Image 1: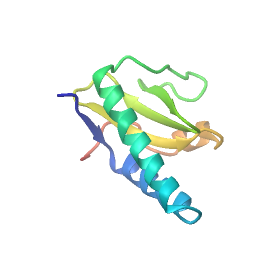
Image 2 (image 1 turned 30 degrees about the horizontal axis):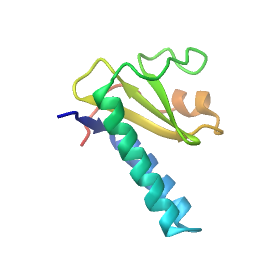
Image 3 (image 1 turned 60 degrees about the horizontal axis):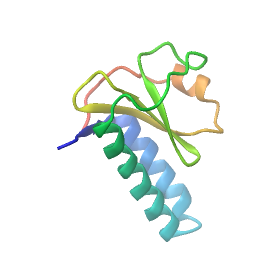
Length: 107
């Protein structure tokens, strides 16, 4: 069984995304939540998918796009550890510099 873990920061990102979208459409917020969790399962089954972004961070993480969002995760840890889920149009370099990308307590 493919598994993944979400950092507290990634969980907060997901909550913020879903709440923001739900202001306009509950159906759309449920769809994006399903898409994100489906992508986490895909990443867990194939942890090498995605790409590095040395222009954004030197941390050992990979980026996987899900629509307009970027899932940022550690692939060399089992289970795969998702550390962030951010909108791709945001200032990712600034956001990633201000948050821990190391593996911390998670669910």
